[in-house]
Length: 280
Image (cartoon, rainbow, N blue to C red; front, side, top):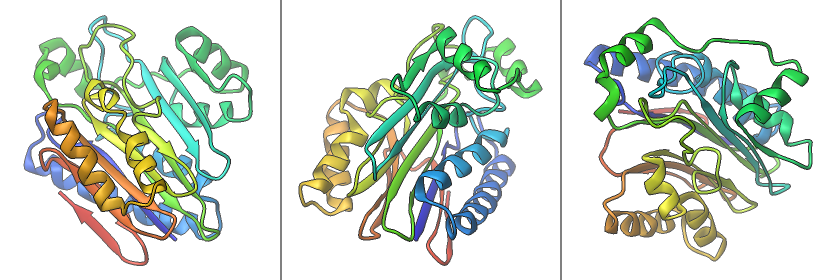
């Protein structure tokens, strides 16, 4: 059993050293709690659990504390993929909910499994997800000062391998901040979140770059075709570099290979496979 999570890029809000350390500590606590949860839960249940915890931590750009779009609203996107069943579900630009990953999880039971905007919100309300305002005082101040207009942005995500050898991936984002209303990122697409029986990948970074190279799907496909996770990821990042793309990924294979890579050494992540690892 293994798990790895990411908290996007530590530069996303002009982070100082104290904020960076706080993110490391938060990731350590969340990955440790999620690894304990994995002991008697499936990979699918665990990635939803872990990403929900990440969404609840205002240090990260997902759920509570998400970036604000140019019209003053927060719109959240999240997706979930079960490597065992090959079912993908997600919400795009949903407003006024606390945990978009949990809405994506509920959608996995239905035929129409990816919803956006008002339709996603209506589904959430129909299934008991109450009103929640994810804007923190800090994000409001950043928005008003337009401080976040030029920053590289991140997301949160989790991939897990359970005791039965099954994989799952989950990714959630609050967007890049001050973007055009209703912009669609990679996080609720198979470019940014993908899993099958062989590998699971969650991405962070510039959504358009990740979509341009179909990053998560490409890595998983290469692993499925016989490549090692490191080789598949490195090759895909070489192609990302050709378009000057900016991204980070975390991944696990069914054999237990665990790997992470980012374009600019800014990604914060943590892993647990019996011992804790934390980076950046």
